Image (cartoon, rainbow, N blue to C red; front, side, top):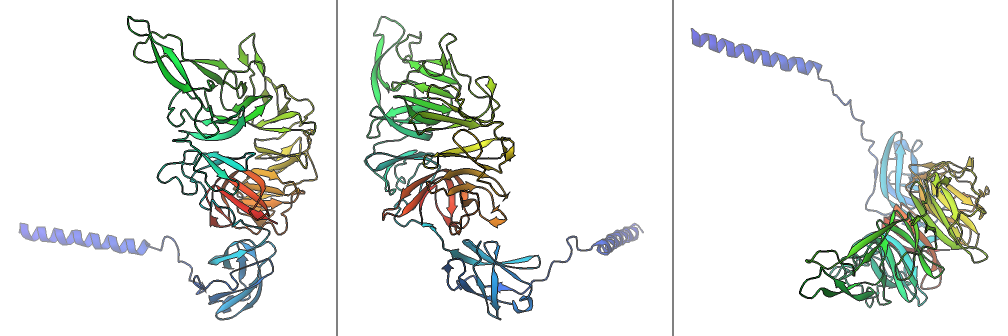
Length: 539
């Protein structure tokens, strides 16, 4: 009897499970809805467009099937820009490259469905310079390409390999190259810098390098973000007798130290030769120096005592690394200028009368405890220049500033929408007195902002950022504008750019063509892989 009850219980439980499954089936509509039926449209990925490249207006034929039912409703695009459809057959489609077309993938939109095809290269006035010899670039950020008078250049940044020449022995953040980018192995930097370099300059027969580092080659200590090098790339050192705690035995020892005895407690972003001295700007709060000869009552190590002096964001070094207390310094309080109450960057240039001007910009509301509007200019003596009057300035942060000596204009970029109360959408052109040049007007962006811009001597403006459209035209992070702010015809056919620019340098190719050297942190230009430094010809 018990066995029969047990069997009935089992059947009862099985019945409950089956009934539960049926109820679940009754409730179980497709949770994501019915997927759209495929269009049956295919664009060949193996047969290239004919021709595979061409200028605006070129007629292009692309292999594709399944288009006939949609020939009157499809939209054909070159890198997102609508093209004129010439004809559609069962096996191909013929179109014309539109005026706004640029290098990138072609695609066909039918309703809200998109079919992506192969790449088409739109040729224009900006092209890869085939005479540039460092085709593999650098494996990290490039912050400066410093041209020397002897026809060579120093490249600094955050890289450890340049043009694939640093596989066996790393090229740590500094390299000497020809003006065509060829690596120079005779520059003896050894292990190089142990942190990123932002700038290099020449003064007093030495190179000065600056950034965020504490060691160079075999000198792995006693450097605070700046030091001096011999012309051959070796660090400039001095042999010093240091003192230990007095004992019955020898109380002195000898050691090599960096000769440039001075630095900062934080990153140095820029250095400039200034009245025979070294002007530095950055995110620091203190000047630091070391005393190698003072006893510290420690008998186990050599004596190195660090002293600090309060001076913020802007200071001037003497050539030996000591602090120049004649520049932006109060000897009564033994403190430097307060500078800005927010992050800054700087740009130094000389004006028409050959006076040095230091532009200061960023995101701050006071400077030296006085009201400021995110941008100002300092005189050669380090005081605020009253001849530069920005009015109410930018209504949000300024990210970059450059100056062109030919046009005598400043160009700023950022997240601002106004300058001195007038419309200025992310880019503004300024006169030397700080007023807005209203002949330039930036159009609307989509997808991001401009991070960097430079005006060329021709008046054209090169812009890099993370935007995807400008004035409702596809421009993937890179564009060239007219002096009025419109996309320059013929100069905007390059494809997607991925990354950021630190500088754009007007130069020439090896065969004498006008060229632009682009440096920064990027891995793609014209939809091709490039690493942080490239040169393009510009006609």
